[in-house]
Amino acid sequence: MLRVTGIDYGQSETRAISLGLWWGAPRRLTPPTGPVPGALVAMPSSELTIRTLNVPESSREVQQNVIREELALSLPFPLEEVSWDWIESEGNATVIVVPNASLARLEERAGPEATIEAAPLSLLRLVLSQGVKEALVFDCGATQTTVCAVKDGSLSWVKVSFRGGRSLTQAISRHYELGEEEAERRKWERGLEEPLCRQWLDSILEASLLSKPLPWERIFICGGAAQMRGLRSHLEESLGVPVQPFELPGDLHPYQEALAYGTALAGLSKYPHIQLVERVEEGDALPWKYALGLGVLLLLGSVNLELHHFTAQRSVTQQIEVYQQAVGKELPALAKSDPETFQSELNKRASANWHNQRCAPEYLLETMARLARPLSKQPQLEVRRLELEAEGEVPRLTIGGQAGSVRQVEEFRQGAQGILLNPQLVENKPGRQNMVTFTLEGDLPTL
Image 1 (cartoon, rainbow, N blue to C red):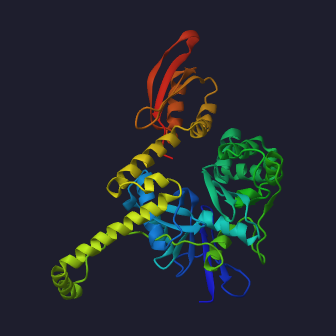
Image 2: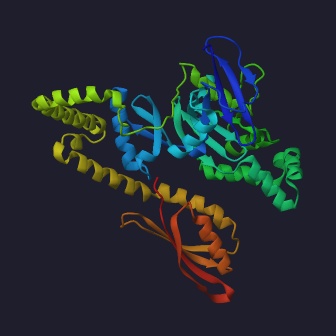
Image 3: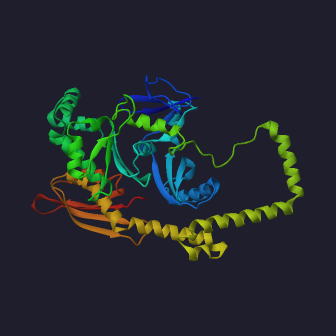
């Protein structure tokens, strides 16, 4: 096969780009209505969890064992419910994790022969295709905006905001009491001259928690909503860094077709790529035709019990060496500890590390920044007390203040869902001057 196809199943439109593996200009294909055998398909960033882990400079098998152990400790859901793959550079692994349910939905649409890629890696490949190794990317789609940081030719971090072009159109429609078609037309005609459009972009920048001056000298933009009039100049003014769309070959659209082209680049060996397939930790039952051969192997195994014992001991020793190698650079004292207590001590330290990170001032400030949005929707609601209880197994945040009504407090509590775990009102009673005093408690979510 001399060409590869990259597909972006967008919310508003499907785009497909065919790319020659050795020669030939990229081609724009008619959007497929069914599966495309052998295609590369981008999994949306909103469906992914991304981890950056230290791994030993060893074989892929050893790195896989280390990553599996790390994910088992850090993910807030069972490892059996997700699939994952990784790219590695200089001892750092960028691990992409996707729920099996999300993977199954995309596989059903793309077909069993498609390769499921990850949208953030498509953005990384786009940056590398420009001859750049460090940049910030804003992918403004219909339902979400992805901000992707590339450092030293690798993914540094990815943040997803569910503020896409469609939500902006709906906000304009509600504010001016317009139909969606008229609101869409107003959005494109006025662009960032429309106050709601400017507020939309500023809220994305605020949620991205970018520090100034930026450590990137270039910013790329793509996605349909990035074409909005004035968006590029407003980003440059706000961030103080030149902003530009990707330079794509041929007549490819630099905004709408960038993600599909970046996905197709995974077919070229010089670019990083992964393949998300469902991982089965336990093997399925063998077909009946292998039963006889299996019986012979079991018989031979029963005769060689001593050999199996030796092999098992050797496997345990090798596993211990893998753990020791993985943590030797960072925790040399732990790597030299008694092998029988090594795993339990490592688990204790990992748990303590996660607890400390959840109690860190940076994480607390990030959580408060996310709470600023539901708080801003209640103009008469004031926060007057913040307390962090970090002694328990799960850090708990207590927020106290006053509001103009009980309804405002309840709406704030509902807005805090997804930011805090199980936010509850422990106090909500009338106060002075027709105000309501409240106390809200919720656990800090897992990183």
